[in-house]
Image 1 (tube, rainbow, N blue to C red):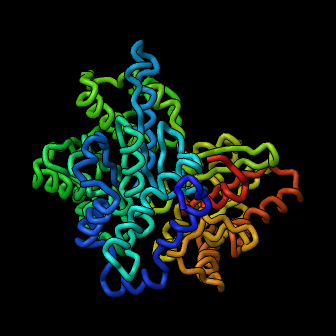
Image 2: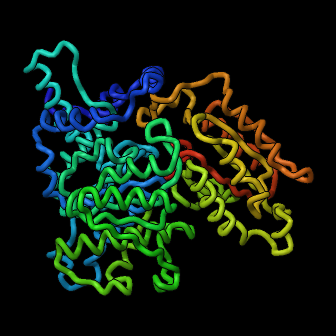
Image 3: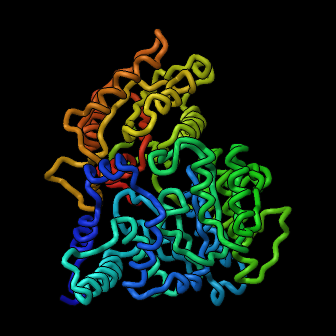
Length: 504
C-alpha cells in the first residue's frame, strides 16, 4: 500500500499499538528496569533503520531543553522568538528562520507534538511522514527475517519521526524538548546541539530519576555536550552543584541566567500568563541569544533584551498552560486551564489563579478567603496516583490562597464515554481503576484541608466528560458567574479541551 493512500486515523492506530501496556510497565519498574543505559544504543539503532546516523541531525542546529517545570513553555518561547525575530527587520523575507518544534505530551491531537513554523502538522503531513518511518522499520524487519516485529515504543517513534520531519523539511532550527530526565532520554542521541537549556528543577518522575533533587539534576545534566553552552536558571543549591559538575565533566561552558523582571522586559505583555513565566522567558532569551550569535552572527548587548525578541514574547501561545478563556456557548463560565502536575508547579498555578481571578473579588472579601457572593468557583482535578496528591491539594486550598472553591470535582483522565472515543487520547500506559479508588481518596482528603467555617462539596466522576457535564448542568441552575480551574495533569487539561471542543 502506498503512503499517500493511508490516513491519519490509520497512522494513529498504528502509533497507539506501540504504547506499552500498564501492567508491563509496572512489572518492569518492580524489576528495577525502565529508563537505563540501554535506551540510547537502542535508539541509535532505530535511527539507522530509518536511514540516519545521529550525527546527521547536527545540521538541524538543535536547541535541546530539559527540566521539571517550564521546559515546554521555554521551548514554545524559544520557537516564537526565533520565528518572529525578523518580523521588524528589513531582511525579514530573505532571512526568516524556519523552525521545528518537538514537545510532549499532546493535549488533544498527537500531531501537536511536531510543529513547523509554529503550526502542528496537518493530518496529511502526519500520515505521510509517519508511514515513511513505519515502512522503513517494517522493511528492515523483513530483510532481517525478524519473527517479532521490532519497533520503538510510542515516544521513541515520535522522536524518530520528529527528526525525520525536520530533516525532510530542512528547518533552520529544531527545538527539542526532553521527554523524561535527559541522560537516557531518546532525544539524547543528539551529538552536537547549538545550546542546551535546563528549566526549573523539582521532584517528579522519581520512579525513573530518583527520589532526591541531586539525582534528578544528574539525569537532567546528562544532555550537556562538550563545548556546547549549558544554560540554566536559579536552582536549589544542591541541584546547581550537580549541574555545574556535569558541565565541567564534559567541558561545557556553564551559564546561569538571572531572572528578568516585568520592568526589565519593558513591561510588555508576555503571551504566557503568570509570574513564574518570567523564569522561562529569561532562559528562552539566553538560548535564543546564543543561537542567533552562532548561526546569524548577530551580537547582542547582554544588558538589555533585544527589541527583535519582543514580537515573539508577545505573540507566543502555549495551550493548556495558564490559559484563561470564555466560550461563546457558555458565557457565564470562565475556564482556567493549567497542566501543573508537581507540587511546585501547582503552587505557581495557584499564584496565577489568585492573581487572575482575584479581580472578581471585592477587596473586602480578599482577606476572608471567601468567594464573592456573585461568583462560584469549581475545581476539576486529577493527578496520577504515584504523585503526592495530598501535598498538591494543600496548595489549592484557601489556606494557601485567597480563593475558596465551592465545589471540587475529582475525575479520571479518561476523556469520553466509550461511544465518543478519540484515538489520539488513548493511553494504555495508565491502569484504569473502575472503582475510582484514587479519585475517592482525593475527595476524602479535600475536606480535611478546609477550615471549619468553609464548605466545599466534593464529587467523583469516572470520566472528564462526566465532570464537565456536571459543571454545565450545575451552571444552568443558578445565576452566578462561575470560574472553573482545571489542573493537576496535562492529560486532564487536554481531555477538557477535547470535551469542550477548544482549539489547541
